[in-house]
Length: 304
Image (cartoon, rainbow, N blue to C red; front, top):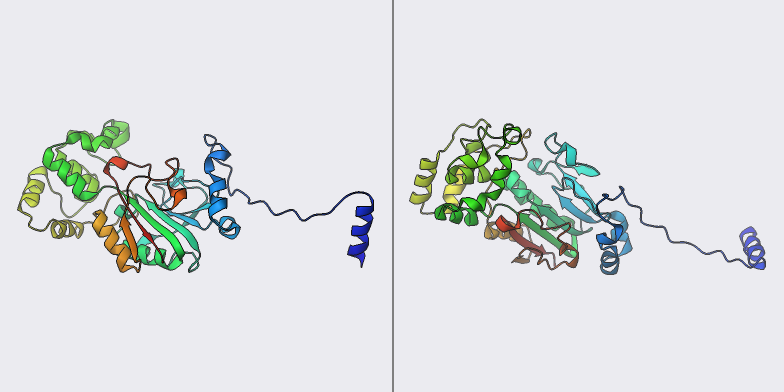
């Protein structure tokens, strides 16, 4: 009765009371170099329900400094990446635990240049968890570098320019915490090994039970009758160091990544390419697929 009387009084003055929808809050102020319009919010709002947008039901695993107002960042807590980690839900993929996401609730699970830093078991678990948490029709996208066969081909050609990022680690103030000498100063075989199984490379300051020089690597690759078996044998010599989560500890090809997706339950699994996702919001180079596309692989799965 009181509510009706108030409404009649307000209307008699020529006003109308209406319910204003709650705005979707941004979890953090956007980076200064990105205008709000660049987040493509209208596309998200057109393609996805408001409930998913409000929950930020889009998950970036291994997100580092990623930011988008509709996305949730998941990453490993480490001093190694501390300067980049803001607004992050901390996880440890190596524990092979469930992701902190409800089943059948996620629109997209995306991970870029993460799986090479953890064990095969951890990636198996990540794929199973992605399948569990995704809604039917949701997408799981993996981008990863290096594509090991692409890099081995570069080694065979002697294509030192393929390993262009090593030049960033040539100055003493840059390389001293990770390399014994400038990254591009060692043979190409050892540069490949450092990028695939970091601990095993002679130029890595990490301790390991075994180091392989260029001659030994050449012999291994030349005599190998099953390259995947050879790579697996090298991977068995590598351990995950939580103090150096930036190390590479496992090898990947598109076929291997797709096999893991299929074994996790995905029936629609396919090889993709740079910015060729079937999910429209992932075709935005400002946020996705931007890291080292010349040496990366791209695979995707859809939960049916």
